[in-house]
Image (cartoon, rainbow, N blue to C red; front, side, top):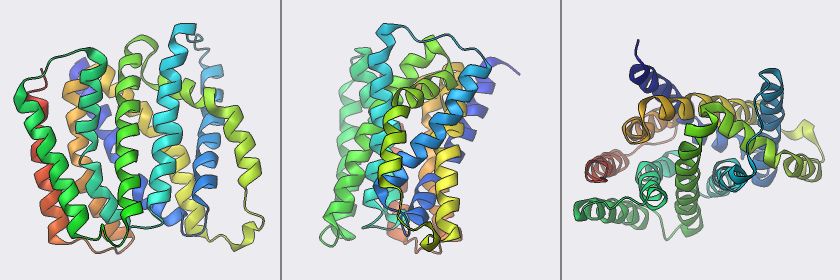
Length: 287
């Protein structure tokens, strides 16, 4: 099997793992505070990442890499988990997953900005159209009921797109799984302190489902998924493998419907499909 094929397989596994993140977060925030969930998942994943880096004796990143690692940490270790956890206190995971349809586009935009590319005008046409579809869905399907949840999801997509683009760029130098591992380790001291401060006073009141959700987002969403994802981007190319994110909304909606028994309306599916088509068009004209 050639390197490109391995990249597609690893990227697909990463997307499949990430698809369970929002449903697992939705379950966890039913009993856990969003801030505690965010810092605890980062602390657990950071400890595991530290062990892996020591076992494999990975070389330390250079001083010039620290800024990029900090951006990755702020985007995918802290920003996206915290903002989505806060959003899911106001909206269902099925509703939030529609916004994930914008994540490939956000990643592409930051990739363009970081890479200095000059996309054709058609790229921006698809970009604006996709954004308009998501905004229209939010307004028609409950933006007036929970504007906080929708705005938090939009902010989460922006910071995650930045973290993905920066991590993909850095993975060419440090390696796929090493990027997220060093980002987790970089933020570990702060996450450990905040975990100790925000830990619930009574753990007995937390249900088993919430602990399962915390375990999933700590081990799979925060670390294992990125091992496959960044490796796939490095092996198969950012632009090509990045398109696999288009499958994430469909996987996520299926999980929300089957595991959480949340209602997935026809409108959600139509909007998600339309956003996916816009992202496909934007990707085509990105260079």
